[in-house]
Image (cartoon, rainbow, N blue to C red; front, side, top):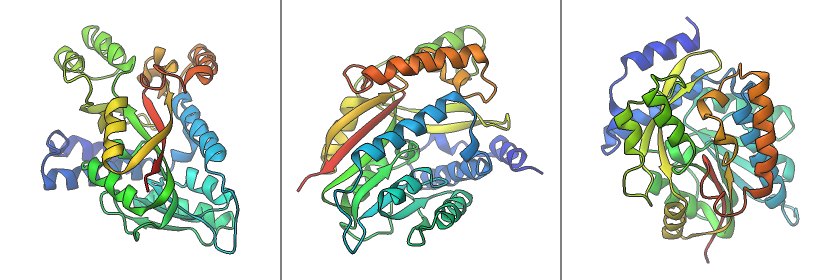
Length: 321
């Protein structure tokens, strides 16, 4: 049985724990569930063919290379933590910049790929561990920079605990690059359109569920189960915490972190439904429109309101002294 088929059987038989993230058992189950989804994607993660993720990963890499370049490399390398390292896409970029990389993830198969990737590239000092973001296995103030994209934090049941752990591990004046799923996007409009037109776009929400996203509180994000189609064609339900820009700024401040810069990824490209853009077989016309929108987005994604009304809220924060 293929990994995708095993995952499909698992998803069909799983408990409804992702709807009850307020208990310890539910949170633990959710973490294992998400880990199994990403393990099932291990063979395709580095070769995703949809336009959405190629653009996202490229923008994150560009940001890391621009803002995380060490000012100097002495006898000991600066340390970078990669929280939710996946297959090491950003770990490799950090290592190439001169960092000693320590990565964690909840998916064993992805960690194995990351370790092999960095070893093959000659970075023998990179280390990867199976751990979750709520309990980082690192000492206080170990990191010069931390990368937490993917968007890892949106998958973490106790994301406030994860933010405190990230802050604990950062040195004073250390930098954090964080990506989370945004609440106020064109996707909620597409989801409502989909709900009243018979699920033509595969959001898999009822009209009542789609309407709930427009209800107060408007400054706090909510939890959803996003319908995601893997490259294999298997559909899974991904539990996600959505954030508003003001909520993210407030929660980072509560953890001792101050936002310095912020960007909005998929603020204009989401004028096309995300479920369409996640497909590996997105047609030539869809891709052409997407890349034209992406070129426009480059001009505005660091400017309000575009950096607040986006599917991915990307921020660079600094730990306060």
